[in-house]
Image (tube, rainbow, N blue to C red):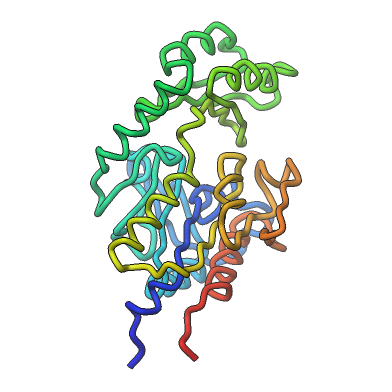
Length: 282
């Protein structure tokens, strides 16, 4: 009989969620005539979906591979998702600012992150104050602080002043932060808060605990600029043919780009994971 525990130790899969694995109705793209399953509700209303085939394949993937959901969502936002394969031994939220272990935030990791942010330059309060002075209600609909780590704006994309993002990013970078836009959201993020660092920490723990071999392959997927470093540092990675990285024409020698866009790209990504991972002893 096949030993799934030994297979699990050969592959770590770190995957972004929104517009990579799961999709809102607005993010379906043109290819919407496929069976879907709802994986997130907000106030009782369906919010995020996967194709039915993707959901079934995701469940299959979690049997032999260590799958690590890796998201910029806050802990509370992540907890709304009923992703196939749960419960998760490890999950990464808040863009790497929090590591959840069996659903519980690891405070040692968070304290270390907070120390790094303080040592890296401007404080969150300073960033918030400067950003508020640069925006107004004509193009910003929401200003949110995420898990006391970073902030993001919800904007009217066509109304964002020309040059705003580049100027704000330049101001931030000299102070240990950066800014990027994904759809209707503009994130302002400290350099210390990084998905790839959290993935490396989870990998270290899995190896140390004997759950992952030293030679295990790391696979990654994501669609936004905040995923770029995670994709670059993986052994092999994939991104969908949509999103911020598509707009930036982001590529790398280890990177595959899906043929599909929208929700079908999520299905293609899961199929790629299954094909790329050493899931069989034969």
